[in-house]
Image (cartoon, rainbow, N blue to C red):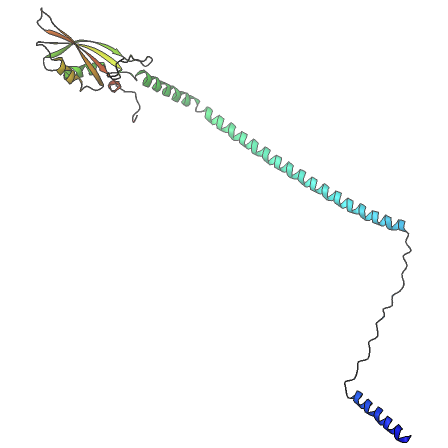
Length: 243
């Protein structure tokens, strides 16, 4: 019995040693308990409802007050803008009145300018078909051959208010005046040479030779030529320069 007991004790001792050779185990952590005092809500529901309603009323008051402030600010801004625009309109009206007052000082000058412009327009219109016939007849005389004299002439000229009669033949040019020319010469004239000489005149359109007859009393030959002139013969003394 003693031998078995000692061997069992040794075995237990060996197991104890093997267990003690490892790291020591950590003791388990116990939960932490927090103790609070017990509370009981003894307020009746009616009081809670009143408090909640009071908070809603306060919120509505704030909202209404904020909206009222915005309305007041908008009204003040609109009033200020309207006053500014009204002031601008008044300033513009005052400037207009000042300009009109200054313009009254120049009414006479403006009337005089209009009258001058009207007079110039009338002169330009009235003289638009004017031909310096005295100078032009002198040019005709200078263009005729030596020994040929202008004895008479009949003129038909355009008017500023009437259209001058134009030729029906497409071979004839436009015309603004007609000169029926009578010339005398001591010898039988060459009317073709006359037409050639007259073609160098300003405003020449065409010329038509007429008849030639001899005056037995004087012994001179009387010849007729019809000369047509275009707009280049106009004097243009009232026309604006550069046009």
